[in-house]
Image (cartoon, rainbow, N blue to C red; front, side):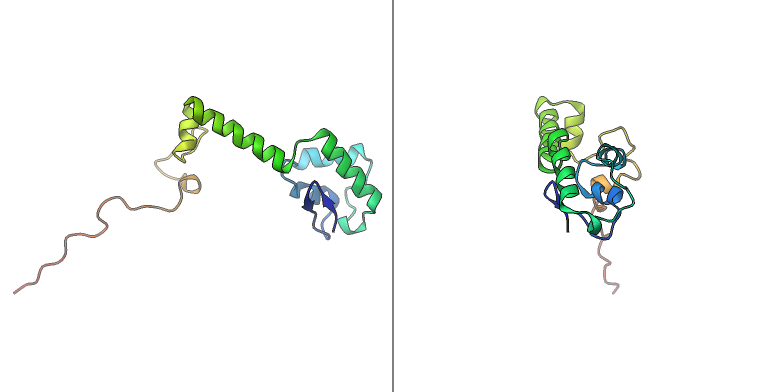
Length: 129
């Protein structure tokens, strides 16, 4: 298994797909890396030799911010928005959609499981005597 930027790439996948398993690398950047190193995108990860893996690793560490560094930067950006009290920061703090989506319906992914408002039960049925 090839280890690139601290991530084990899946052996059976094509190189262009496997690189996307690294946080911060999507389709465009994956294609760009492969083009710069003039590798075959259809080549499987298990068929890569050590030299190719090292080339990929060095290119990513030199030119891109990925995995832990990128996650930390994103979290610090969100923390900054919350601290300055911006509208977006407020939405993050309340776990609501940030980019203007509706919340009357949908938004379940962001808001979590439904919570029923109210008592949940009607008045207890009285005994008829």
